[in-house]
Amino acid sequence: MQALGHETRLSVFRMLVKAGPDGLMAGEIAQGCGVPSSTMSHHLANLERAGLAASQRESRVIRYRADYAGMRQLLAFLMEDCCQGDPLLCADFSEIAACKP
Image (tube, rainbow, N blue to C red):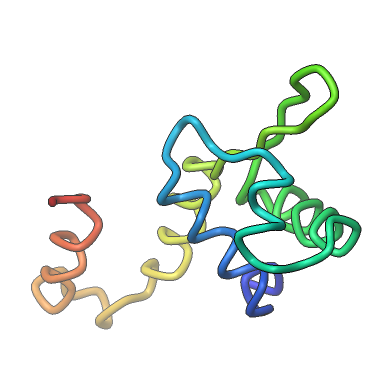
């Protein structure tokens, strides 16, 4: 939760989720957020440590992708005690999580 508690990291995570499996280069992320590369490195490392992003070196640059397994674990944790155990009260959440267009 701490990793997403910062406005920049939340924006970066949303960018990575929207980018899909192709992800984004670190420089693209920094430019898109208007943040210096050194500062962005800190934010990306924080997301990676939290299990919400993954990196892959490609020559001299690093590509970042959302870690969808980590995102699912976070969502499962948040929903674990939802609605006092009554799944009917949480039915709308399953529709949101289905990624329908």
